[in-house]
Length: 253
Image (cartoon, rainbow, N blue to C red; front, side, top):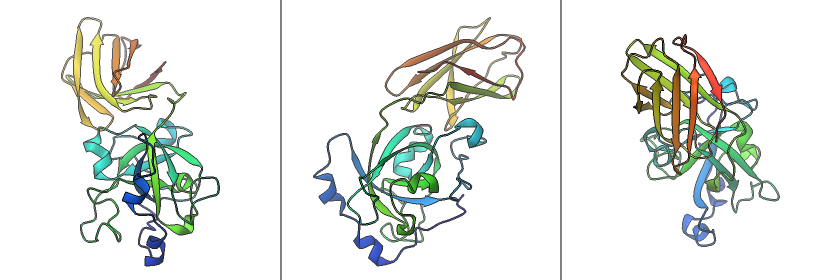
C-alpha cells in the first residue's frame, strides 16, 4: 500500500511527542489524541483506497486530501468516507500556528505485529493513528519529522461535491459504491426500483453495499443515511436503461 514509509524513526523524534495523558487533559471534549505518519509522494501518488472499495481517488474524491487509519479508527470499514480535521500537537515539528487539515478516510493502515506499537507499529491496536497522504501531512508538520502527535475531531462541514453512485455486479446481485458528501460515514443504504419497495443493502466492503434482486429495466432510487441519522434520497438517479459499471451523481447532504 505504501510507496514511502517514514515511520521508522529515531528515538529523538519520539521525545518530541507529548504523552497521551498530558495532552488529553488539556483538550476539549470534541478532540481526541492520536498520532500521524505519512505515505505516498508529494503529489499524492501512492495514495490508495482499496480497503474501502474506492477506485481512482482523483475521480472519486477530486480535490480531497486522504488518509489511512488504524484498526481502532477503521471500524471494519464503517468509517470509510468519514471526514476528520487533524492538527499537530505539542511538537517542535508542528508548523507555526497549528494549522488544521481536513482528510477523508479511504483505506486501512494495517497492524505491524513485528514491531512494538511505540516504535514502528504505529497502526497496532489500540492506537488511534492516521497515516496521512504526504500532501495532507505537509500541511500540519515538517515532512522530515516522520511522526508527530496529533489531535483530531469530526470535520466541521460536508463536502460540496455531489453524491456519487456506481453500480457493479451481475443480474440478481447488485454492488453499489456510495461516495457520500456527508462529513459523517454512511450508516445505511436502501435501493428501490420502479417495481419494488425499498430494499435494504448490506455493507460488504467500506463504501460498497450489496443486495440480491433483479433490478434490470427499472429506474433506481437510492436512500442514504449517515451516522447522524441524516437522510438523502436520490430519486430515479439511475435511468431504466442503466447498466453495470455505470456511475451517476445527485445532490447530497
